[in-house]
Image 1: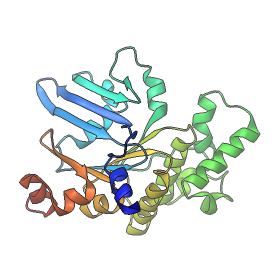
Image 2 (image 1 turned 120 degrees about the vertical axis):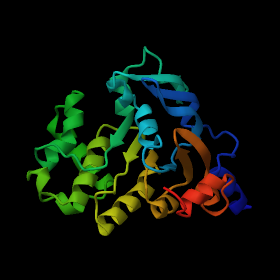
Image 3 (image 1 turned 180 degrees about the vertical axis):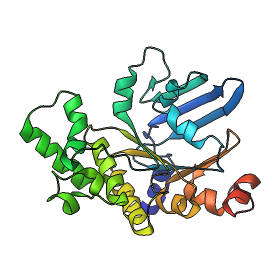
Length: 267
């Protein structure tokens, strides 16, 4: 019975479980080019959702839609709805600054600020008005522990962040986001520039972080998607071809195009 209930919880069938993000009839255009074509998706809270597909298929474009980063592109036009906790974030009245505090992005390459480890993590809270040193100390330690980095840098807090290894820098960037207490973490190929050991640490970190955050990751690594995600969506030329529990996508996909991609026949 316990296994039965666990299965239904995982697929979102447990009564009372609501989506963290609902995407309804989403279209995105760069000028006349349709980059996202009628995408519909329900993303569950406290789960890892992987987005897979060949380069240029719309994965990263979709990810950037979830915190309105595409607003920075003049020729971009978006139609449809992205509902986060019942609120349409595409509403023109949406406070985009607050949205990006709730929905944060981890980029493909680590991008620590050219300042100390401590100041990197404290940067967000300071921007939002936190000045009390004891509180900042507490936030920095808590965030570094949450990103599995505290033990490696606790004696280097006043050293330049750029002196850390690539994997450490990426976890520092995650800690910098955790310091402002987001709800959703968007990860755009966060391990593609890292060695296998650092990649494993980031993957293990995602498993821990999903207890508190909703995580959406873009990856070209099929093995990674299978390892870390609870749900997987397959994009192809702007279409969401298939979205399902990860195990189903990788063992019994409904669409032959999905099967062809994950088995390496194209892409």
